[in-house]
Image (cartoon, rainbow, N blue to C red; front, side, top):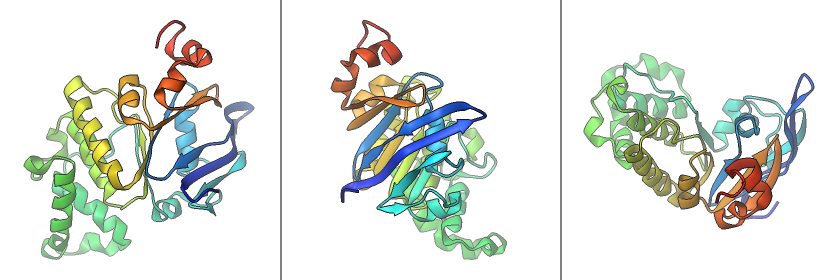
Length: 251
């Protein structure tokens, strides 16, 4: 495993009752890059994410994080080693404030469940750190607002803040732009570029203009297998990719 590779899979395969959702995937994510997994619906992208974060166990193959075999580890163990993940559906506490959501994430990183029974005054010691994360994702004006009151795009920004609270080296984003309008896409794209300045990002994304703008490297999946890899210019010019994903005759 090369020194600049943070995540690598070898022959990663997942079968469900005879159906092969991920087939012999050899993925290599280079440290400090933004790497996209793209492909048509049913290509195996989210299943691959679930394998990487240990929500699923592979039928066969290995997953290496920073040179360590993490294939047999549990999700919490993988998170502690430096993988953070956001999901397709925003996973925040809707009736807590932005500040409270981020503070809970900071408590989780401390690994002390008894923090939940401490007084508000004691928990306020985390406020400076929480407010810094909130500022990083552009939500300072909403720190006191309930998460349920936020626009969809700002909820996704809050989710990224709670993920960043765990201080991941590798951030996995599952369709971060799903359901967003143009203004929110621009905001979240800028946020991803900002948070990638000092960490690695692996993302599943359907919006190809976002992929073209943000990503250093792209892996195209179809029917659970890697079809092509490279930068956007390379994969978008590949005839097999154009047929399978982009549609024949379209860039």
